[in-house]
Image (cartoon, rainbow, N blue to C red; front, side, top):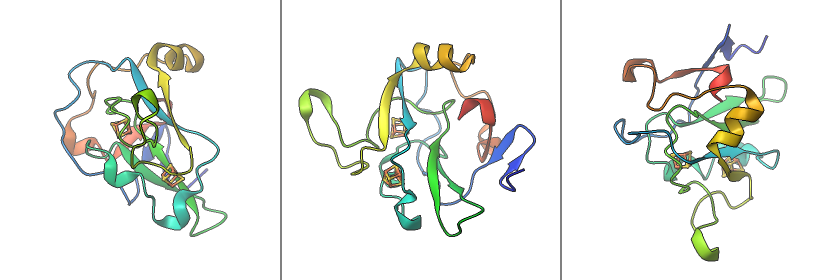
Length: 137
Ligand code: SF4
Ligand code: SF4
């Protein structure tokens, strides 16, 4: 088992996004996913600082190839704002991931594909946001 996981929980590692804890009022229509293009930016992810939500984006180390790893997204706290991506509406360029490694996807479709119903609001108290169920990543 990957040491960064404990049973069904993933313990988030630094760097972790820092921001607000009260932004998600309801389930967003779309949310961000990380695709296979994520290189981890050699341990200095360019995307994390753009996320306005506390502990939403976080580091997952590649235990077999330290210090490499990648970024993941907590789907229970993501508000779907797309600030982490480089693609804005109508072709606008945003200052997010420069490697096309983050995509915005339809939330209902993601839930159907993963057999998961995400909570409308974060389902853990803020003190527990540094871990997340594997099914919500
Ligand atoms: S999502 Fe993009 S910016 Fe973030 S670590 Fe991966 S490649 Fe780097
Ligand atoms: S869409 Fe917004 S809330 Fe979700 S991971 Fe990207 S920056 Fe964070």
